[in-house]
Image 1: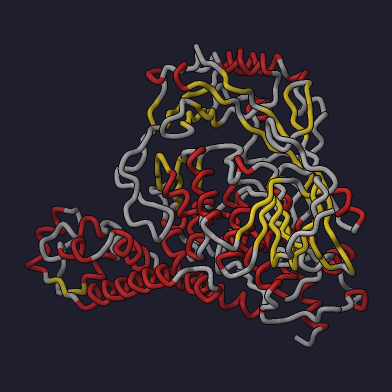
Image 2 (image 1 turned 90 degrees about the horizontal axis):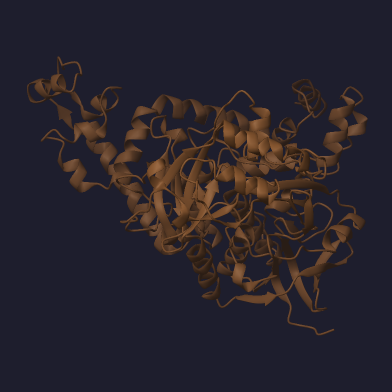
Length: 621
């Protein structure tokens, strides 16, 4: 057995979680070994060719603000950009882009290769080296032994992965890629609890065989933005997506294959994502609906491959082919490959601390789908936090965590470690109680200083953030101090359908009106200079602060109350069996998760408000 050099951090798996973990640890100064089964599939977009979306777009901006790479890579490789939910309040605005799948993976690999502290090894890890409940390294399938102070497992769907297409099933972590064996079995012998989950992917088709005239075109935004706060010039040229629909004939054909469906026949034991169901699941659960939307998404600038979003399936390939050709625009469709379901091992995340370190093995971290989540963005942010903390553990530094009021990332991790998940966890804005504070426009305000202090966000990023903050303050002072007079503004206000002024008032009061916004106000000659002096990003942030001031203040007060609970520490070895009045379920959950604070205890599924009151009384509060 050959002995290689020792590393500070070993990252197992090079998907979205693994790439962010490796980049973060190396960027902060740790020596990193990234082990992947295939060097050609680093940062592979296994499912849809897109980043962001509702709540997910906020996560990408948070990763970027901290100094991660997902936003930068997305901006470099996007083919279309849209800001979703513009018709709703700013807490709901969510950036999303269509990505060039091949270029996304290429740019991630190049970014990692540019860091001299990142080494690569193509192999699969079959065993962990563990001594005295601490990680010491890994052993690969080829028998190579690598030592490390910390290890981050980001195995995605590869742990005992099983692919299903109709009545066929075979081992694999992705189509045409082998599953990973050995790790689950070892972790279970070490005392970890494991489970099974499933996810699925649609068929891919040849775009040259589609009739786009039969579909509805979906263009990108007229004035596209970007994910990264560092991106100077947003995308100039964009590719369209298209929308079509299933129909009753499609549904009839799909139903013919239900008796051969691995999901309905019970061959798949793992639970799938509730909010991204397969097409057969949709027509079964929503039998009253005659059609479902299909989003036709190009996979890149130059490829003809098309992703059929909304048609995820594991039915027999002949059923898939017959059904898909009944969709308007798909009458002559040629398949590149069928859709399939994949079943894989995961480890309930209640076995982790808030740093994503396992409670059982010191120095061992889990990130991504191994924790029961779904989605590139959810994986990327876990990889970032695990990478940061693996580095800090290796360098004997204090851990880094984010609270629920800091970021969607904090909400996600808090949900996972306290509530666990028995179905693939996906982030939604509704999961965040402080979503007015956790907007996509202010992720830099919330997190860039933290990233800079960690040594992850660069000085260039920090300087850009400071300049933006100075401009926000400057513009806010300007609209507070600039008075508008009735004789100068009334005729214009009437033309806008807004009530006239009786006396002079600061410009900020016009912006507070529900029937006016900055884009209309700057049309007035006396306010026109605002658009010339300030970026759209600055103008937008000031407008949100002004219009939603009362909502923002209300949430800040809620955060202060929550922090009071977070400050109430629970002793590490607290004996819950001493409190006879606690409910049995509560006592079991508290002993299992061992929350660090009363705030964390209050968010554990099964721990009631009365149990928290009992705890507070017992602790003399």
